[in-house]
Length: 304
Image (cartoon, rainbow, N blue to C red):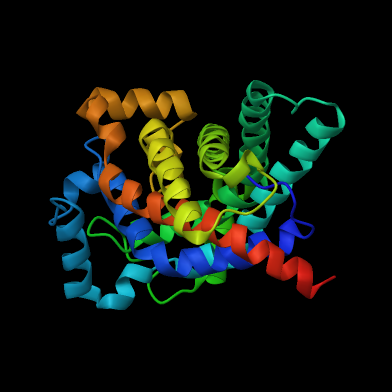
């Protein structure tokens, strides 16, 4: 990961908006499959069950049109910039702090630093941006599923946010699933940043990690980092989705949610939606790291 960006907030925000516009349909399909749990009474009463990612996408387009794949998109777009900006800015801050403390001199120190900097960046991103945006968006997606109640039909993100606040309150509505989101965010980023940093060190000409990788190398390096993190953290993502869906009141905490899901459908239910998540995260992280490596120098020159 480059640590030379002078404007990581602006660069990260621009990159985040570009990325989510391209990858949101995969996020929608993933969420639908994650919320289709055997532990869900809504799923049990639904007439249609998605057999897989392609069936989910096709059924959604058939019943709601292509626009149906973008249900809840506003929430992701609104927070895409802040999320990406927070992630990269926090990582840059922690990394520069580690540099000032002389904790990044050797390759082993850099790898350890990337791990803990990614851990902190992921936790901050989850607290400030991911939880409030996805708590609302997940309910919008769940409501639009075959097992949904249709209570938010025709409402935009802000209308649903207001309705969720009135029904559930701030902590149990806007910030529901916070523990799972922090676990997922911290685990995801403490994998992505070190893996990308290690790959960059291998691919960078002359081993100078302060220079950006060309897109032909940055995108696949980011994609590999994303794919590894997706597989490793999928259970956290599934738990977070269920804790933020329409049946969030059923689960006392992340551990209770995990136990309920496993008791009803086995460990494999924690991996529902893994295929579209790998596809989405591979594209997401490849684009994020690849674009960030290119956008940062442009923004720095523009604002110099």
